[in-house]
Length: 148
Image (cartoon, rainbow, N blue to C red; front, side, top):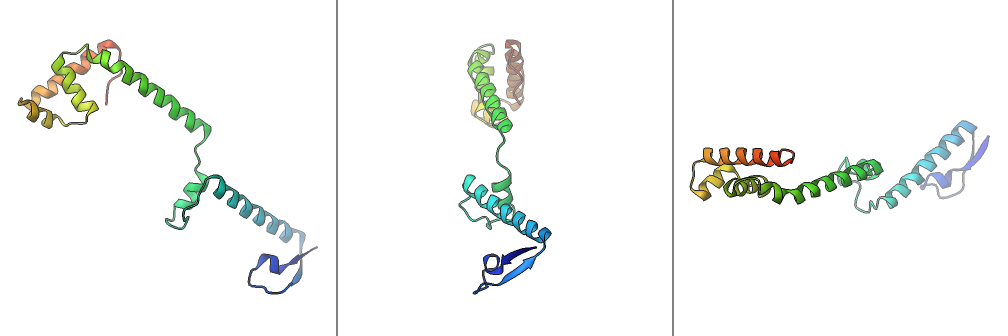
């Protein structure tokens, strides 16, 4: 049997109140205290200085969903692959005709719709579609993966 002071556990106690508890209760209380201490450490570690009560999901997201080393490595590999693709893009675009290259660049890189490209260039939208399709085929011959 262990003796605990209820004033240490319950803040509304104004005076010392000693109670004997069984070993199982004592271990459960110690485990709860450890979990609260760990929670406070995670809050500091993850810099969760904002209100965790702002949204119902925010506390769990901030404290339980830290990026793993594997996630960080995967992001770095994706970023490196993207940079290699961007570096090869000008050479691949040189395989297409100037019109195809201009339209592929406008559609995939600048994010302009095919109808907007056709309106700007004063041609039918089917011409733009065909030029983009052929430009992509010419770029694939260079060895780049298809753009999506």
